[in-house]
Image (cartoon, rainbow, N blue to C red):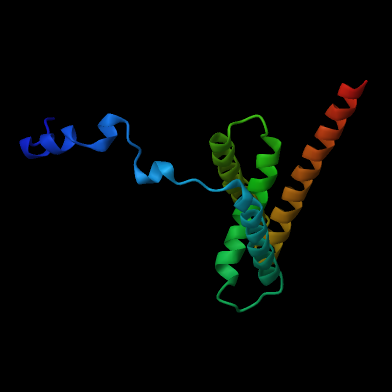
Length: 147
């Protein structure tokens, strides 16, 4: 494949050829804003779980519950994967979150007890159990290093 002749002079003068960064490469999230983003995410997830559990007719129920169903297992899985780099950890956590949600869904459909409330409760219980296992693992490994 060859490029059209009209574009070659543009490519030759492109700032990236001289090492300049594109505008997307210079955007950074300030570390001071990360706790604020984490708090907002936690609030949205909590509202989603609450709206699903009380069977609200709010238009925010669907998106907030979906966010909760993705975020709760993802946070638990990300806590278990501390050794990975941040991008790999986020990718594995989101993939694992989708797997947890599909397993809960398949299990509920297999026993003919499908309900939104039951799914939210099951995902919550699995996520909390995983977080407890991670904290237990850290306590055990911390005690072994002290001896």
